[in-house]
Length: 158
Ligand code: ACO
Image 1 (cartoon, rainbow, N blue to C red):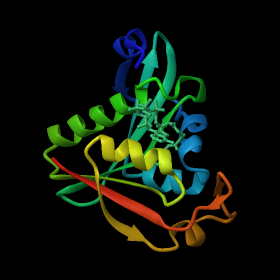
Image 2: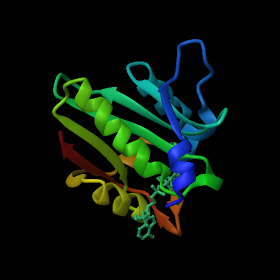
Image 3: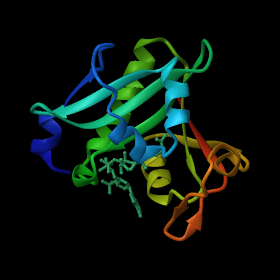
C-alpha cells in the first residue's frame, strides 16, 4: 500500500450540482442505463487526491435494513494501491452511520480480483443472481476470456 496516496485521499458526497463521474462508474458497470437507474435512489461518493477525482462509489438503500454498494471504481492508473479498500471501509462507515444492518455488494462470477478484495474486506458470499449479466446487459461481457454470467452477492453484517 502506498501510504502517501492513501493518507492524502479525501472522500466526500458528490453534491447535486456536480457532474456525475460517469467515466469512473462505467469502469465498474458498462450499462449507463443501469447506472442511471440506481443513481435515482443512490448517493455518489467521490475520492480525490488534491483536486482530481480518482475514485467513486454509489450507495443505494434497498429497504430499512439493507444498503448496497452498487458501483465502486478507482481510476485505472491508481488501482492496486489500496484506494479501493479505503473506499470499501468508508462505505461501511457510512452505512453504519445511517443505521443500516447489512451492507451488500455484488460482482460478476468472472471478477476474481474483486471477489478476493471483497472477502478480504469482510464480505461473505451470501447468494447468486443466476444469469444476471446475460439478462440485464445488451452485449455479452467477457473478463479474461470468461463470460460474465451470474452475479455473486456478498454481504457484511454491520
Ligand atoms: N488475486 C488475489 N487478489 C487480487 C487479485 C488477484 N488476481 N486481483 C485483485 N486482488 C485483490 C487483492 O486482494 C488486492 O489487495 P492486496 O492489497 O491485499 O493485495 C486488492 O485486490 C486490491 O485492493 P486495492 O488496491 O485496495 O483496490 P483498488 O484500488 O484496485 O480498487 C477496484 C479495487 C475498485 C475493484 C478497482 O480495481 C477498479 O476500479 N476496478 C475496475 C472497476 C470494477 O471492477 N469495479 C468493481 C465492480 S463490482 C461493483 O461495482 C459493485
